[in-house]
Structure formats: C-alpha cells, structure tokens
Image (cartoon, rainbow, N blue to C red; front, side, top):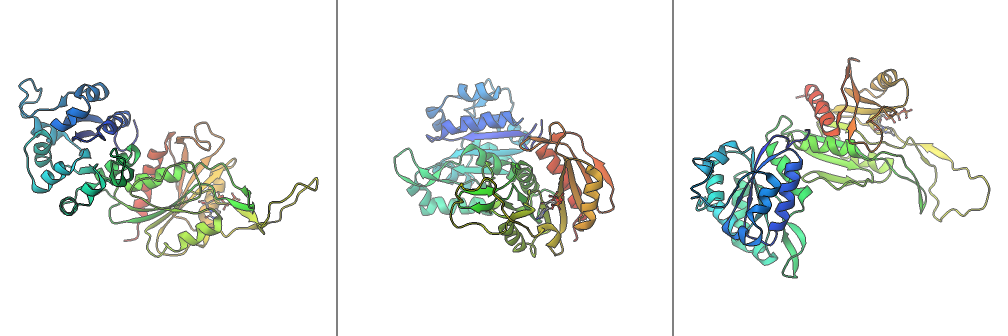
Length: 398
Ligand code: CTP
C-alpha cells in the first residue's frame, strides 16, 4: 500500500471528551491507510465510547488499564512506546495536556508518551474558554517548544452549543498532521518548495470561463509528499474540488496571470518550483463586463497568449515542469526541457490507461536536464511525487 502511513505503528491515545466518537473515524482511516493502530484509552474515554468499538476497527488489543494481568505485552507502555513510529492523542483533554506538559505518568497513555522517543501529535478538544485559559495556553506552548505537533484545534460549534476555538480537527487534517510529524526531520527539511496545481480559469464574461480537465490531484500529492519529508510547502492552486491539505501554505488563484503573480512573489525564497498546474496557454483578450447574450449563430472570442510562468520564472531554484502530451511524448517533453531551461520534466501520456485526468494513479517519464530518460511504472500520485522529489533533491543548489 502506498502513502506515508503504510505499515507504520501508530499509537492512538484517546482521552475523555465527547469528540471521542471522531477518534473512531480517525482509527478507521489510519487502518485504511495501512497503519497498525494500537489504541490506548484513558478511563474518561471509556465512558464515551467502548474499547470494543476501537478493537473492531483496529483488530488489535485496546489498552485501558496499566495493570491488566492478561496483557499480551510484558511491560505494556515500554513495548508500545518502542514500536511506535508516531503517537497521536486525539482528542486530548485539558487534563491530559497538563499532564503531558508536567511529564506526569499516571496511566497507560502518559507512561507510554514518556517512554517513547517518536514524534508526538496532540489534538486538543475542549470548550473555547478551557482552550483560552492561560494554563492551557502555557501547557500547549511548553509542548510545542519540546517539538510536539499541536494539531489544531479547529473553530466551530461545541457540544455545549457555544462556538469558538477548541474543536477537534476533522480526520483529513489530523491525518495530515500525523504525516507531517513523522516526516518533520525528513530529507527536505529546511527547504522551501512552491508547487502549482489545478487548471486555471480564464473569464469570458461574468458567468463563463475557459478551463481544462485538470483535477489538481498531482499537484496536491506533490505538495503533501514534500510536506511529509519536512519541506515548507507553498501550494499555488487554481480552483479544484480538493480540500486544502493541512500544514501547507495554500494560495488560491483563478487565472494564469494570478498564478504568475503569486509564484513570482515567491521565487526569491524558494528552493524549487514544480509546475504541475495546467496553465491556460490562451485567455480571452477581454473579459466582458456583462453576460454575453445569445444573438448571432457564431460567436468568435478573440484569445491572447498568456505569459509562460515557468519559462519566465527566474532565480536560483530547481525548475520542474510537466508535459501532458497526447503524442510524441519523449520528443515533445525533451523540447520543453530545453525551451524552458528545466532541471526535470515530468512527461505523461494522457491517453495511457490509469494516467488520465482525475485519476489517482499516474504513469510518467522523467527527463532531466541532460536529457536522461527514466520511465516509471504506474504508481499512485503520492508515490510518483516521491520519485520526483528524489530527483529534485539531487538538483538542489546548496
Ligand atoms: N506552463 C506555464 N505557463 C504557461 C503554460 C504552461 O508555466 N502559460 C507550464 C506548465 O505548468 C507545465 C509546463 O509549462 O509545467 C508545460 O506545459 P504544457 O502546456 O505541456 O506546454 P506548453 O509550453 O504550454 O506547450 P504546448 O501546450 O504547446 O504543448
């Protein structure tokens, strides 16, 4: 199975909050992502959901008591702590956060945390006033200083009926925080990368646009894969149906020109620019102010060439382009390497099976600045992304 969580040992700590029901969904998504999930529940958590519910999802023993004589582990907290690639506490209560900040170890979860040396993610869930309380804020700051990843909390409505900051993050954001935490010291740590994604939208009039079939999945996967290897990621994205990935600086744009401006503003500080976006080559010369009425049988819309963002982006960074081709893949892509002065181009045949628009997989050919050709097999877009970052790493100008 592909992805950052495949075959990873995740300890999921669950403490007593009404948000415990969401931890079931998190456990389920972790398992679906290929992780081996060991759940440790506080006494409070067992009052909200049953250990059986977690066990049914993870197919593994659920720890609820430090002194379980039937435990399969000889010294449970040490065994779990040693195995863990990451510990995630979701939801984390005010009380649990305070114990972690003090280093208290009075139950299975907190003893496991103290015994472990892997990354720790803490996802607070509490009412707004409890979150705002100075002691909570101080305790969270202490944990952050120690390198703990504090996931969220989110903003919204609480079970109390009040609204504010303190909600447990939704599962996709929690997963993003977990992947980020595991890769925080990865081989792209300290690097900043700009990735573009999606198909630009060029207005014809207030209701119509010229766009293309790009789903944005390749660009979003590239951004997530870079984040999961420790990079600071800026994702400049044209409109897509995808949700903004966690811990990535997402810049929303519509047109090719807006994308150019957003990227140009960041070229001085980036170590790599990866243009996965399908940028319109032509835009309506003039976007009409009013809706075009249906009058003539034929309608001609004058188009003007857009600026080639990649070709005109100057600076000391690694330059990666994409070439979506329907014929003469390698020859066309090689021409683009030279025309746009690229370090690497990712060429894909949009007619090949499993590589079309919107697909979760892609089969690409990488061509580098020396025109060396590397044909990759059909892979998930996340795996393709990692193969691309493997190559980009070699081009970093230190
Ligand atoms: N690109 C860009 N700015 C544009 C058009 C394209 O930065 N105005 C980038 C794309 O994001 C991609 C690369 O250039 O990384 C190649 O895009 P592609 O559309 O395949 O090539 P073009 O140069 O536009 O040539 P053609 O459409 O004729 O194949």
